[in-house]
Image 1: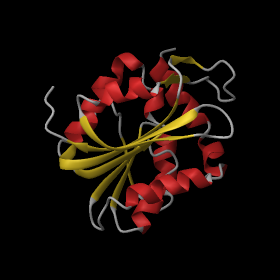
Image 2: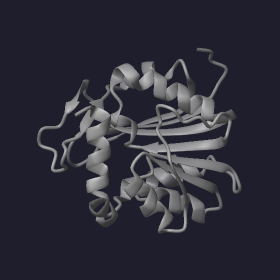
Image 3: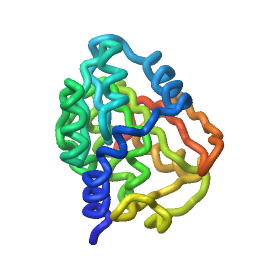
Image 4: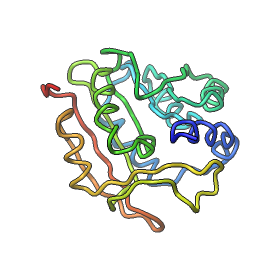
Amino acid sequence: MSIYSALLESYNNHAGDRERMKLTSWKRAEREVFLGYLEKGQTFLDLGAGTGEHGLYFHRHGLSVTCGDFSPAMVQACRSKGLHAERLDFYQLQKKGAYDAIWSMNALLHVPKARLGDVLGEIRSSLKEDGLFYLGLYGGEDSEGVWEEDPYEPKRFFSFHTEMGIREAVRPYFDVLEFRQITLEKGPGYHSLIMRKGMQER
């Protein structure tokens, strides 16, 4: 089974589990920080939206939100909250210049490092000029592979980046406005990047 197929099956299988997860305080704080960069009425994509909890937050604060996820079960969960949701594959977004802002929290950690540039390029192309991109990823170490202790079935693929590694990865595509590292009580740390679509060319 491919990485992509395993992830799709895993998230379809565990949509109910995701709905029952309690959002941590530090994730709430991250949303507030990014909201401070935005204006009401702007077009906004929650990429890798999951069950739509983040999308709902930004919708309630006046953004024109689209929730995008590759899992039909997750798309349905977003729609059940009254959100506009589409099945989107971040390898082929096909939404050129559509959004003022894109949010992605812990979705791109499933992208193999060899393909991350392709995904970042798709995201950049989907933003309007000077558009903003929030990227949040668990990280701190340099590794990738299937997590053998994953409670989900099929087990998921994860890619972790060092600070230097993720900075190098985004540099050809975005100007970094804010970079923060968040220390968590358990597991890896968290890289928080707020970026702007710059004048880079690929």
